[in-house]
Length: 480
Image 1 (cartoon, one colour):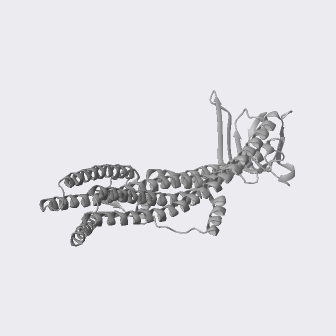
Image 2 (tube, one colour):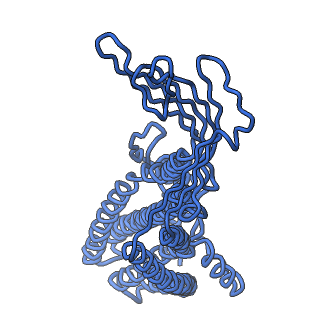
Image 3 (cartoon, helix red, strand yellow):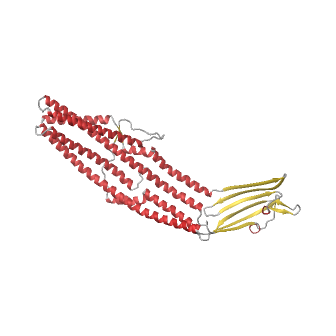
């Protein structure tokens, strides 16, 4: 029993020394710190945030259709040093959200050869004399364009696009965070395997030295040193493979690391992951139902389809408006001046005004009716897609939940297997020290223990990824 106690003491001392060195030589990169770095600086996250700014710019552009407009027209003709005509016509046009255009302006003319509409005949010289005309009025669409028009449609579409851009931003960043989380936990799993293999290489080396010393004392058979050496080298191979996997996983993870200057960062030597974040937690059936209900309201895919439907509704409203005939009413009361002296005007609204009516309509309206039908078909297709996507999202949440629950059960079972494998290994080691077993059997028991421990590490990493997957499948915004 003294030999057994001495051997177990050496193993325990080796473990404590190894853990102390690992803590002193490494710097932890916790999952949440990594997460925040990706959200803040990754180019894809920055691109996604630009979608909102781009949508705001599009909305600003659409509102520009309702900006007041100054339109100035000047024409002049001089022939043989004689001013034939000179026209100066400034106008201010103010579009409104109710379809009416307010207009105010002036028409100033001079010269010998004026358009009769822009001058008046001087009986003494038998020529047209220029005058100044000031007016203000409105242009009112009576039929097509009264309730809706392309300008208002463009504004409404731009407002819908803002919501669509926000949903697309959430979708893109959530997808980025999902993949980055998977790669982080793969990196963490690779690191845990490295630690496991390093520890077991150390144990195999200690056992080899222990066996050699016992052979020198005549307490063991020389062939046992060969068995111990084979196992030691075998574990060295596994350690090299584990280190390679960890290094490659770190390179993959560095794809997500950037600074605020848009420069890529590399993982510094000694930076290792933390296991914090893969703890087990219980999600009740009520919480699951609440998560499903919430996913049907906030999932980015459903938000995108909702906004697509809203956009098509705008198109349908405009297409219906296009079925109406185009009937426009223009009315401009004015005052006229000639030679700088005001004409006597008793009632400018009755005696001095411009009035016009324009009408246009297609006979068969095939173009307009065809566009309306096509829009209706698109709305039906999008509604079918919405219902299908909604159903798929519910099933994805349920599948992610089932996966999470199953992995939690697997962790508990695997932990029991690890405990049992460790008990068997310890018992076999005691039998070996008592001369009742062989080193081969001890190694076999230890291999089974190592495999069980590696499997436990793998399942815990899957569980951590499953937690992120459940969050992603529900469509919850995974960033602030």
